[in-house]
Image (cartoon, rainbow, N blue to C red; front, side):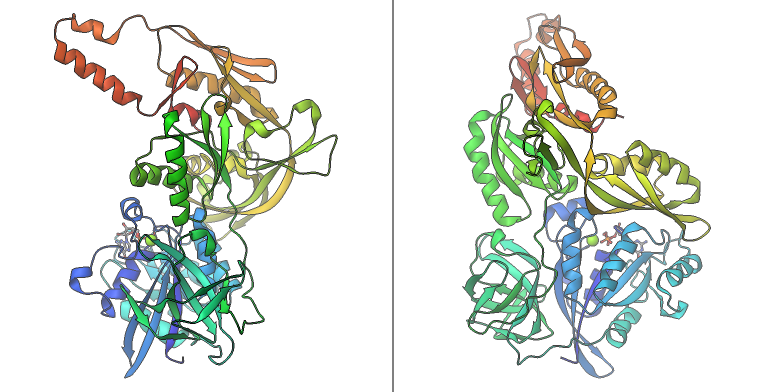
Amino acid sequence: MKNIRNFCIIAHIDHGKSTLADRLLDFTGSVTDREKQDQLLDSMDLERERGITIKSHAIQMDYEFNGEKYVLNLIDTPGHVDFSYEVSRSIAACEGALLIVDAAQSIQAQTISNLYLALENDLEIIPVLNKVDLPSANPEEVTDDIVDLLGCDPEDVIHASGKTGFGIENVLAAVINRIPAPKGNPDEPLQALIFDSVYNPFRGVETYFRVINGSIKKGQEIKFIATNKKYFADEVGTLKLKQLPKKEIKAGDVGYLITGIKDAREVKVGDTITDSKEPTKNAISGFEDVKPMVFAGIYPVDTEDYEELRASMEKLQLNDASLIFAPESSAALGFGFRCGFLGMLHMEIIQERLEREFDMTVITTVPNVSYHAYTKKQPDDIIIVNNPSDLPDPSTLDRVEEPYIKATIITKADFVGNVMSLCIEKRGQITNQTYLTTERVELNFDMPLAEIVFDFYDRLKTVSKGYASFDYHPIGMKPSKLVRVDILLNAQTVDALSALIHADNAQTIGKKMCEKLKELIPRQQFDIPIQAAIGAKIISRETIKALRKDVTAKCYGGDISRKRKLLEKQKKGKKRMRQVGNVEIPQQAFMAVLKLN
Ligand code: GDP
Ligand code: MG
């Protein structure tokens, strides 16, 4: 055990975690030339294409240092806030962390939030100043920033480049010299932390764990404490680039477990694995179920595909336990599902995976957060509102509460004014303002989650010319004045376009929605009135003028093949459209409320 080191790499997004991990793997000879590729640990296609890490990944490296053999377990973590729960569990599986800071960007919001997570778990922090090869790097200044943040000596900061490989040897030496070896007792009852799981269509769910005490053996009967389910350890092993089966994984080490579980929901990140007959008395603390933050309806474009969509969602859920869904129906769209997501990025990924992996064409409706409503009759009973149509009639309502977050924004002094106006526009209240240096400012706001999950991040980037980073944590529910704005097309309410909006903004947003829908809904053979309403009161109105000519008319009726091509083109354009009554609504229209600026 004294020669094991467990560590993770934490950083703000794009500061170079995955690239640095690649260099560590190269340097320790953990990959052959043939296996080499960039961001090697990002194994999902989607991760590779988007250049982001969605899942945590673990890999074991062997390294000889001063004549002794060491086992280094590296856990790469996702940087996006949607997946921060995974970061927190990965951190709990380690004794140390490499804190990567981009030498051109310096400390950003997630640098700080991930650092706090690491400090809460008592990890040894090794600061790494990365990307020193960049011409725009500012090594002295950024080192000062790091020293200020950590209270460390400038000599503790390791200069490195994941791109050129500069400094990698020093990083490895620091991992061995500064990070403590794991403690724990191999003779105590088994106690292992699940920090990740991966779905493999052939072998079922692979569970990644860190053994705290005891050991886990092939063939052992084990139990997951949170779910209280028992399994046999069909296979255990260590995580090299390929899995390496072993007879036993002992206290201090990291490994994988295969039990034949087919459903990702049975394996909960943060849960404790123990022996079924001689269980540990102590579950590892801090386990909590991951809660979805954003809800939206997913409907098949073609109503006949409902059952197929259900089957696809069930399969996808086996693979992604953080997706939740329940059947719902909409007067406008028919049968579909109300789904819960960790955030907008997660929602996009699910929609994309449904299309790519299951060949489904779906419409996603206006996303919303989860509200609490209370009626005058039963003012103590929470009604959870995940869908605008679940909001009780306003005349019966006692009060409504909405989820709030604490936002941390780091920006340059020049942009403080812009960022503040944006946050205030989004109903934020400033709680703190700290100058980290003369140039860089940290701002804290309490804000409604609903205001930030949608376009906030894009707006923030615009008003700060890219010089602002952002992170948030939920802080609970607060009372709110919410109303439901309904949209009527051709005098018919389209429930899938309804949105819950703060009363003070309802008028403006209703008007903007009508204007936006006018732009987005294609003209048809007849006039289409668009109205926004709160209850029976119409607050805004626009009209989509009828189309006068048939598109094929300009072909003079002569050229049949040209005519056919045009019709085909029209058909393709229809793909992501939904017929509601006699109006065709494109997918973008359902997202219109999110893009009103
Ligand atoms: P992550 O989001 O923290 O995992 O960051 P990545 O490893 O995906 O890197 C983000 C971007 O920075 C990629 O385009 C990398 O090629 C680039 N990058 C990473 N490390 C370095 C470095 O040391 N020098 C330079 N110049 N670019 C780097
Ligand atoms: Mg990455």
